[in-house]
Length: 262
Length: 343
Image (cartoon, rainbow over all chains, first blue to last red; front, side):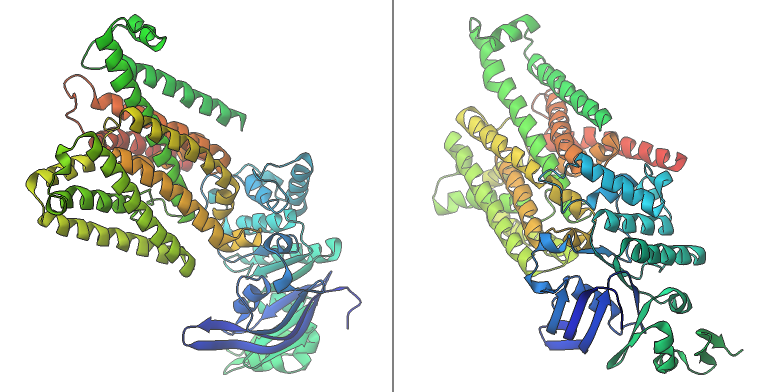
């Protein structure tokens, strides 16, 4: 289906929570792959398990069953340090930090590579500077994190993930809280990272129309199933209609647009 | 970075000045030349050299290491719990020390038939040991809980609850105790840099000189923890192990300081805030040495004020730390807020 190199493979993955009162399955039997150089977006209704899936893939929580291969190695076989050089993460919530400059925060992305003190070598400093210029936030470099807008802060966190130099980047709703131009800008930025830098980018989002225009591949999570394919394929399958359409809302399969019937 | 090294050196100079003032000033007037002579080994005036070497110098040294320990411990707690109101006492570790002391002091007359408050030196040693055992016991409990629960807030709440529980037990003990024992316990609770002397002092300072450098080992860990658990984990940090290590380091420091000086409030809570405002950074490579030095300086200042003529022995350290510290810190933080707005 894709000529790009496969970086992540899920085989019969089952995700959810293990609690005192037994196991709560959120989704099961997920078989899918992610590819280098592709922007893949995870969509679906609230509470369907998008964050759970992302958290499981980040190894923040344990899977209930099945297999996750990151570059052909099972996720659970990775050591913390090793994994931090494979997967970079950007989360919805902003870290509440006072008195840390943008540059210092991006530099923390070098932590998996730096020694005991976290001291940056010449090489690290160059990588940090490159990450900052790649995202285009040079003018923010010396600003304090607490004085940034949400959109600026999100870019800084993406720059952190770039400095981390991981082939894979996961983002949990990176466009939430952003104004509309910033949403588009962030998505374009992520798309460039895939195309120009060969990263595997996987993100969850609720910005449906934007996603349909820009994503290479869509994972639509619904109750008991995940529909995977290019935006057009997923639209043609009818899954998008069943997700969106209800009283007064229709989905145009050909234009990939949501129509509101006033 | 360079500017901050300059500030660190400045604080170090302040410490030296305060140390000298601590040696010079006191109820007995000793000329500066004599003080210098005594420090250089002149023992001709026995009274003066006793005052300097057995009272003022030990007291200053105790203040330095105690202030440093409390301050860095407070910084660690605030970072781990991402809570600006966290301090060394927040997990009930110093309450644990109080419980240890309460058991020994308040129960001694009913159990052993002899009041510890009359036992002098042996009594002091017993109190220190009891305080260490009490606080380490609470800390062991906290560390055990820390490995069971995931959330920081949950851990914080459990810590505070343990603190209340321990305070309640102390209250019950007090109710059944003799009056003079209660007085001894209350005096211990006021805090003092002067209670430790002789070999005890050397032991205390020695232990702190081993423990304080250990806090430097956690600098990178603390920096990553600023980002929150998920980001920290993604950057390769073993979050639960790191949390346990920081609590251990911070807890042992508080336990030992509390054992020898009593529960000293305020320094641990306030100095980290003072340092963040002073150094304008949240980088622990600066903040850890910064809090250690600033904590030592503030404790020396408080110890100096507590011994000012007229107050001689009348002011407990706990009152002074708050009396001096609160306005200083409030003004610094207030000023910083205004700076922020200007930006």
